[in-house]
Length: 426
Image (cartoon, rainbow, N blue to C red):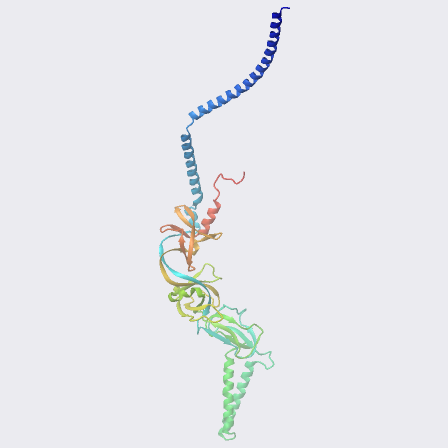
């Protein structure tokens, strides 16, 4: 065989093998190229699209647009909140609720200190009813109770001695009187004829006069089978000391009757309030059984009559006594809350106590914002004199505050708290 032909054949076979391997590699590379090309193509497309989007997108405009939408939403929310905060309360509702308004303004307000106190009867206005004789007590009326009004000479009790061992005192006094009278008249005739001595006559006369006085005292009290006991003055029963069926002795106290015209207010000041004494002028007080009622001594002819000069060893309280006319149906003996008033301060904003509402320890008032609209306002409180309360913050001069009917406005606010279309369910 020709050597050249062999060489060519071997070379051809080698090239063939190389071509096969190269083709396989080419296919593999082609496959890789395909993947690479595919990734590069998509990446380029993505970058191109991103560039186009970036070119076509204005971030400043978008920010301004978002800001405008945010402002619009904020204003809408603010307007909605304002609509919710404003309480709709029509003129007809206000009239039906007895709503009253007061224009806020600065005025004088006294320095105030609170104290515990008690209502007392002024001296000379009490009388004690005593038993004129011994016997068993019965009420002339169905009952005799503390605080009950009575008229002058009105019978409250009767005393009977019929069931007593010693007998009826009225009958005994009458019998004694009649016997003494007869003895006196007999001795008066005998002494003229000197049948009896002058001393016997004097003794008979003395016995007669004593019996007469005793009988006269019980005879005017006689009522049926016993003696009646009447009130010496018009007033009220301050203290009834006896019960029906109880035995009493002559001279025993049965009841205390008070005129109830001039009363006293005693307030016990604590040590930390002593600084108010030099400027102390008047006081207001409230009673537990008359809620919402404030008694003002300035309206009851009240005056300060004494202040304690020293604190006792057993107490850290200083007594202060006022006297006033009982023109407000005040019951003596009652314990009260006292608002002692000192020097006046100018330029103070205050509202009636009834204007305040409380929620979880915070205090609020209601302000009229338009003819049919009201708004709840939190306020910070200062001192209170029982009638009005100082407002430290939350109110301005010229505003109209609800001073009567605040509870009705509060109920209207509660009923309209959830706006229409709002739901708590999800």
